[in-house]
Amino acid sequence: MHFNLPEKRYYNIGEVAEAFKVNASLIRFWEKEFDVIKPKKNAKGNRKFTPEDIRNLELIYHLVKERGFTLEGAKIHLKEEKQKTLSNFEIIRKLEGVKAKLNHLKNQL
Image: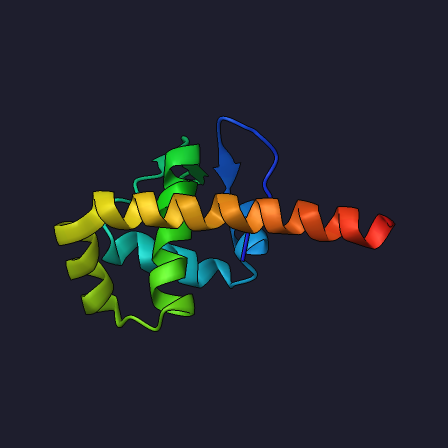
């Protein structure tokens, strides 16, 4: 699954939840469970997620929702193999993008 969010400095929790097709409560839960998610909060306490937070959420989503990791398993995996997992994850996402473009071109033929 590829998450399309417009290029911005900050995203509110509604935008993030919609992009991931999950409830905002799950995003807040993951924020508490995973220390790599550190949204800034404005004076009202509203969360503002950075592009780095979004990348980390994508990785967590991939591990938990797509690969079936438990939360504890995902935490351990991120701690021990984050760079390797992130590199593989980025390669997979780029290949999915190329595949989508090729399918689009194929359908135009």
